[in-house]
Length: 433
Image (cartoon, rainbow, N blue to C red; front, side):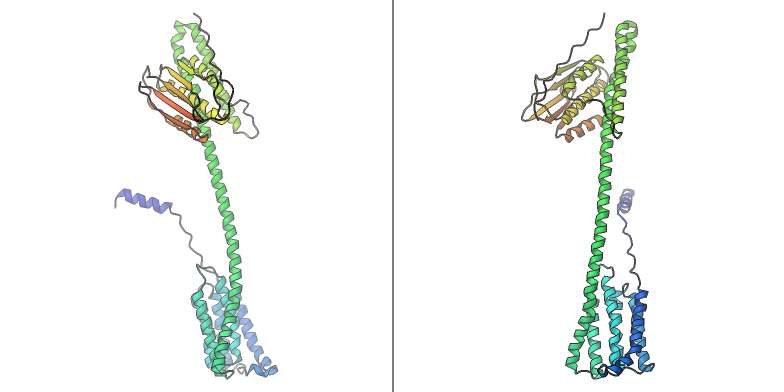
């Protein structure tokens, strides 16, 4: 076997949940002791009962050989009761087989005392845990009881064979049927209680899973926000810092303006981080409005101040989308411009909000071929975050290279009610000579 197959087998073995071994059914020494004491006590009281009621029949002579035979059978039955819950398929028929010794060796009224252990044994066998009820053992027990009762009645001369057979069947129905019904009721109540406990445990596990899923979603949302903040602001700061080094000697006034922009971008980073941390605190107020499509003009103006050439195409009035979808669109444009600045330095960009069509509106960001060297592929989390946001609001995100060697990101969102007229970007003041 190859190492790959061995590792796959090992992983499958580890991943398979181990089943806990079934614990053996408990013994019942207390019930066995009670059965033995009750049976022996009735055996000792049997002569007095026979003296008061001659129809009972002659009991075995006290402490004679027959009496000790009956006592031995009763004690053996009591001992068997202690094990009937653990080995019910074998012990239960054995309880019914022991009275056959009495029906043959000592027939008479003492035979009825064996019903004490048999009643307890059937009840314990029914209520014991197990994959299924011991129906075969119960049927065999009933047959043995009927046979022993019939044999006892015939040998003791209490009735003829036909009457004895009917009496034996009746005795089997009572001795087996009565504890069987009671045991089924007790077992059903126990199973219902265990089912409720398992249901509660399953609900707790489901709640834990939902909590873990919610925590995971919050972590993903936080990672997207942190990525957007870092990618947008830090890329602009890096571009302005690179230009600042060239402007200090050749154009000090422009260098001072770039320094002010860097400071403004740094302050914006701190504000966004404070807002994100504030959202994580109970009862805190973010203190900042959610970005909408109207804020695209200010976003483009900020990127232009960083030195990026951007064309912004906005309709005079566009059907709106929900506030969450507008935030998704704003973040997409923000991230796409940051990616263009990082991977297509010097390329001209176009941000376009299209006219609504068939109940949907499209926002796209395109950039041309890079004028400088591409620093290489990024981590890919920006595009993943944009796609996840689009799915949350029922939108679609597509992206890919263009024919002129550039890149385009296109977001399509469902249209809702009409929103306010979008503002065109304000012209930037010209740099002093």
